[in-house]
Amino acid sequence: MHDTGEASMEATEPRVIAVANQKGGVGKTTTTVNLAAAAAELGKRVLIVDLDPQGNASTGLGINPRSLEASMYDVLLHDVPLDDAIEAAAVRNLFVAPANLDLAGAEIELVPAFSREMRLKQAIQSVIDDYDLVFIDCPPSLGLLTVNALTAADEVMVPIQCEYYALEGLGQLLRNIDLVKRNLNAELEVGHIVLVMFDARTKLAGQVASEVREHFGDTVCRTVIPRTVRLSEAPSFGQPITVFDPVSRGAIAYRELAKEVVG
Image 1 (cartoon, rainbow, N blue to C red):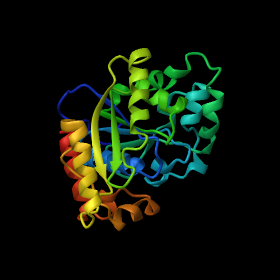
Image 2 (cartoon, rainbow, N blue to C red):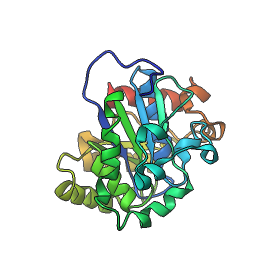
Image 3 (tube, one colour):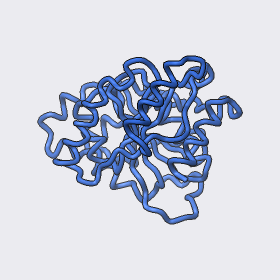
């Protein structure tokens, strides 16, 4: 067990949240990293499981994918204990199970594997008592890695960008969530929908936000994440926005979102 940082005082059940949207470039990793960092700031012990072969959640927290002793690929395909792959981030209370490009082959290699959909769930169960929250950053596809994430999760968080075609592909994601719920994980729910990349200067952003709220009601978070340059700059410095620019609009928004989502 990694004993850096303090466990939160309240003994609440750990929650596993899969952050999913099969469209790429919708702020999924940005939301995973920054929401996790804001939750860690609130005193929660947080683990990010990077399930995207691009490894952006890992590099966005300053982890070099080329220097890893073990990654999520080894956990899923070679039965390496998840605890052996976990790295401490520079943020207190925040930990990462990193990904690298090896994970791209996992989609194919998992096909013949025994209980292939359950690999991640079993791995997370072995460390869950060490954390208050586990966020899984899913790849932008609906393959076996995402199925593993949905099988392991208690709830799904869906970031939706406030742009044209925002709802495109969402129906397919919801159908897949329903399939996983019926066949692999009866407890799975869409917990939160987060509006991201919101540009208050455009009429379209407001229209998309209204449409999403009309469709999904209270599942949509009150906090909206603005489109800001600082949010897109932070990953190249290997820092979450709460560290990179703690007083920026993006940092403030993710702190508000953390209060709303994790209390």
